[in-house]
Structures are given as C-alpha cells and as structure tokens.
Image 1 (tube, rainbow, N blue to C red):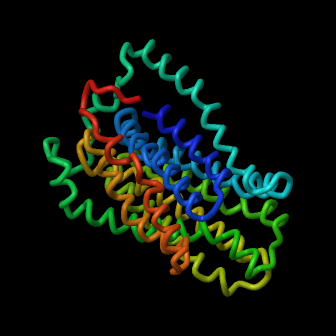
Image 2: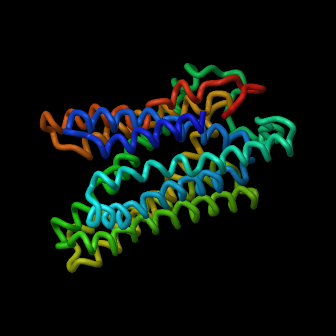
Length: 333
C-alpha cells in the first residue's frame, strides 16, 4: 500500500502544477489527499507492531520529525523555485515520491530476508505491549464509544486545529503583519518548523525515558503532554510582541511544544485499542482536526468553501480502508 500511495500522491502533486483554475486545482488537491491519507494510519499501525511501549514514542517522534523536515524545507525551496521558475514548477517536487520507491523496496527485501516474513511484528511478542485498560477482544465500534477515545479525539481536534493555523498562516502573518518580504520568508520561516522537529524528538525521548525508569505508561505520557501544552501558551501573545523577531521566537517555542505534544498524543492513540484496530482508530481521530483545519485555512466565501471540500479529502482519503487489515498474517505493504 505504501508504494501505491506514494505513486498516487506524486502524480497528483504534479498535476496541481497543471491546474487551469480553482476548480481543477481543488480536484487535484483532493486527489493528493487520497494518496496522502493512507500514510499516517498505516504508519501508526506499523509502529505499534514494531516498537515496544518503551520505544514507541521515539518512533512516532521520528515520523513526525520527518513530516516536520518536509514542512521546514517547503518555505525556502518553494520560494526559491517560485522566484526562479514560477509557482507551477514548485508542484513538480512530487517527483520525489518516485525517488523514494527503490529505498522502500530495498528495505522490504531486507526485512523479509532477516525475519523470513514481510510482517514480523516483533512488538506483538512483548508481554507489556498494551496500555492499561485495553481489552484484547474489543471491536472497533466499542473502541470508538469508550471514554478514553472521546477524550483523545477532543484533545487532538483542538490541538491539531492550532497546528493547521500555524501551518497555513505563519508565512502570511509575517508577511502582512511583520513586513517580511518573500526573501525573508525563505530565510527565516523555516525556524519554527525546525524547532518543531526538535520538539517532536525531545517530547518522544522524554516520555520514553520515564517509561524506561518505571514511572508507568499513562503517567509518562501525561506528564510530557502537560509540559508540552505549557510551551504552546506563549504563542497566544506573539501578536502583541514588538519588532519582527520576538514574535518569531515565541511562535517557534509554541511549535516546539505543539510537536512535542503531538508525538506523545499520537503515540497514545496507538495504545488505546488492540493492534488490529490501530490504523482505523487513528484515522477516525483525524476527522475532527481536518474539519477544523479547513475553516482555519480558508475564508468563508464560495471559493473558500470549495477549497474546504478538497481539503476534506486531503489527509483522510485512504486512511480507513488502507489501515483495516487482519491482525496477523496479513500482508502490510
């Protein structure tokens, strides 16, 4: 499924550069979401099967760091390509998906050679693989109606809306309110996302360290979540800060806290249900944030509503069907 999603995503991304208007652009962005939607739920399912409780947050942190690296590079690279070749050429970066495919197939062959199967799932052999309170035989429907899932859904919905806000509005805010030109955007706007990468790794390692020292899974995740959320508060005062650079520093600290929060919250999602349901449950938790993110990203005008429709597909497309497979013995491509 990963190679197919990568190919679909790469082609859809390049098609965006061929758009002739807002309608065709929204259609292509929707196709992009169909390809992208399968990555995260399946990644979380794989992490839950490969990494023990002690190391699972680290794996999620590295995954989120990779996402952050892409976001970090987007501002300078897209600005440079746009300045030199036009905005359409920036979408041709979708061809990078094809560059990654040989490495994926190589890694897949190595796994099969070492373990004798494409899906060894070593973490499932651990006695402590489940979080406290997870019932092995519970169904997806029962998971979705548990109090723990409701709390996680609400937490992710509120927190991820903030992430969408930063993701969509940081460049525009510093251009319109702080006087940044496109050159300054290329030189400086990568800083908050770099801090976010550090946060995703730091938060993951912090909770993993607490688990390793015997503090318990629930306590370790919660204490880091509280500390991370405290860092996010400073983002609310950035608009009142003087000069151009103090707001950038405050926003950077908030993004650091947010991705530290995210690496732990996303790990908690993998620990709320039996491993066979992880991808589907994770996909459902993404629905609230995406709905809110669409309103953060676009104005309430007919054109904005059209963009929100395409955004609704983006990030969810293949998440539910791609992530639902048998608990053992099924092939995970």
